[in-house]
Image 1 (tube, rainbow, N blue to C red):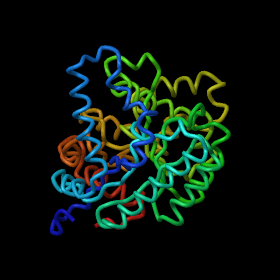
Image 2 (image 1 turned 60 degrees about the horizontal axis):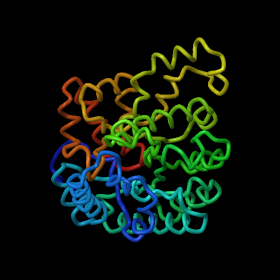
Image 3 (image 1 turned 135 degrees about the horizontal axis):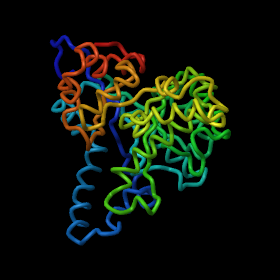
Length: 338
């Protein structure tokens, strides 16, 4: 641990990405990150900068020794590893290829956790666009590899997360008690191509749409014991619930698969703290409760000092800060608090 003497609970960073070099080598050209140098408005100088930064980011995601050093510098005791879906998402691949790459990724994560069991926890990756394979691989992740669940994108190819074809996946996740971390793989609509909008605006849009589907398509109603965390504080969804709740009250067709107001479903989810502004973090806590917020850095980019981001939010009580920094994640993942 970074310090064995301090009284505070372990800092558990729920938003920490990895890539597997062999998987990335095959998947990169099919994922949004590889498109950045050719986006509209990118000059030759910008292209060089993008490529230089990418090399650094990619190296940090795959080097475990460097990761531990950086965790210590960040004040993070434990990272929850998940594959970066903007770099090595698998929706482009056929059944055989996507399953093989998912299994390679999950084996890599399991070995990383085994090498650093006090510092790392793992979430697998799945070929979610092929639901039957995703169900089988989720079971392997939890039962055989002893991972704590899986990370998925905000859609599964053309399917929204509430698509009927994905019901077996959600049922298996609930049955296994698997933690499911939702993090977008990137919105590739042409409207988001300029100015890096896919990242600044598109990711939060995707998170809001994923939560919408979980609510409106009845996933949360059907599987109330699911353990789901949504990245980046849930995107836009938690900050515009007044209008969404109003629609529920006024428009009968919005209530087809819901038995309670949307805000109550929102409070069934967890959210990471990677929102970049303390006032936004406070608003998230006001909406869902501090017990539903987990520390998140978006390693190796994002918040360089994620613990200080939370503990420096002086509108939060010390108990709320401690819950967000570590005890919430420890309870969700079934870890000891210290």
